[in-house]
Image 1 (cartoon, rainbow, N blue to C red):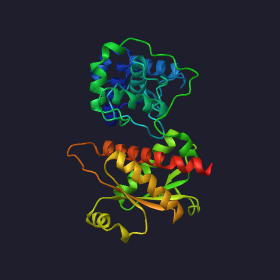
Image 2 (image 1 turned 90 degrees about the horizontal axis):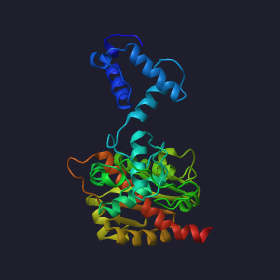
Image 3 (image 1 turned 120 degrees about the vertical axis):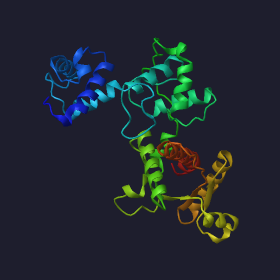
Image 4 (image 1 turned 45 degrees about the vertical axis):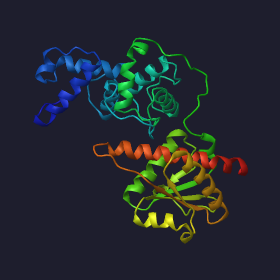
Length: 311
């Protein structure tokens, strides 16, 4: 690796990751020098990961190093496409599995891991969001004595339940779209989350449509609560499109099932108004992802009868 002022931070970052992985770099790490020990560590890492037998730091090596050196709690984890991968995911899976929450410890945050995390959160009295955040980390660390140094239960050959119905996602075509930048971003997250659950998902966002939606596709518009939407709620007869206000979970689920049935008989279109309160200081990514997961879960529940009647 060549040396210049622009590579100094990269060398420090590289050495930090190698130290996490247990490589001994001696004084090179203190001085930030890419010397013989650092080069040998890179070459050993690459060879052990099938990336070659040299000390060249290409993009695939950087990616593999970052995945391998991430520690539990370094980042917010949630179901996403492509799936988050890395040491931190594997550690989370190992801890959950050791405590009896079934997931395959493959270092890839897939739908089974999301379900295991949701089960853990519910068991700990936390909101079962399926996102591994600071609250989840704190709960996990409080139970370190139950999982640290222990092997997880074997789940090889088992078909694990997922957090939402794969059969519904694969059967009912739905296009989710937003009315502004914020809701369009959430619509994209919903579609991404559906595809992360199953690659055969028929739920897409409007931005991913390559052609006009088919006649059997349900169009679901997302709106943020405004003065205009509140007026529409008071005078529901003014709108030809079934509208559901996502407030209390049980009530919203029942209303959405009814709205889907009505929309299917009319113009195959409905509107979801998201009644949310942003909390100052909260991570916007976490807020949007939690909202996307909630909307997708409600949609799966509401579309289940439709899937059964049309299958």
